[in-house]
Length: 207
Image 1 (cartoon, rainbow, N blue to C red):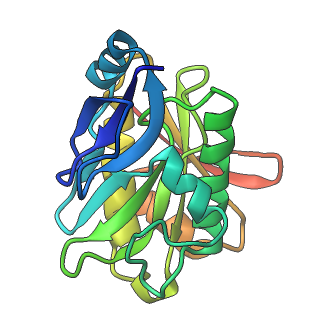
Image 2: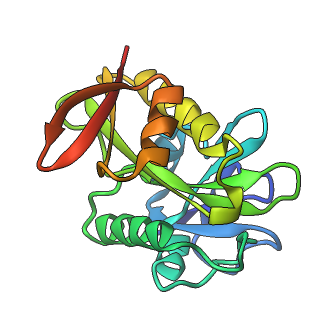
């Protein structure tokens, strides 16, 4: 390992030598390797940030996921002070996949940053890289942020991004029958009901 991939204060990726500390305001991503491998990985990465009208969806780094899964903030300003249960579980999935060498950049968790005040109102992300041309998304919103259309706005943006990626033709979301608010989010984002799977309701958005 000679180089690391870091995120600058403007959420842009850069490759730096692994010796020494990062500049002020920069964050480690947890990815490292030789210089050529790191530069190739950065060149192939999707953007770390997806912007909507009121939100910024910023990709969670593996180093941050390790903290979030324990309920810590990872130096992010969460609405309510700490990440919700769903966001902690998603961070745990990301951290586990990274440790196992299975995490692919872009196909993990994103925090939903409200542009109006910079607060993180929840988390949203993929259950992992696409399989059989389909990607699955889950989401978790702080109770005080619900009812404002944030989840719909973020889901539409993330699903649209996924469908633009090579080899992906369907995005899937699942929920329980009693979670009517989540069902409404999926419907408003353009998802359509599909046959149930293992006792959960399935909604999908296709190209």
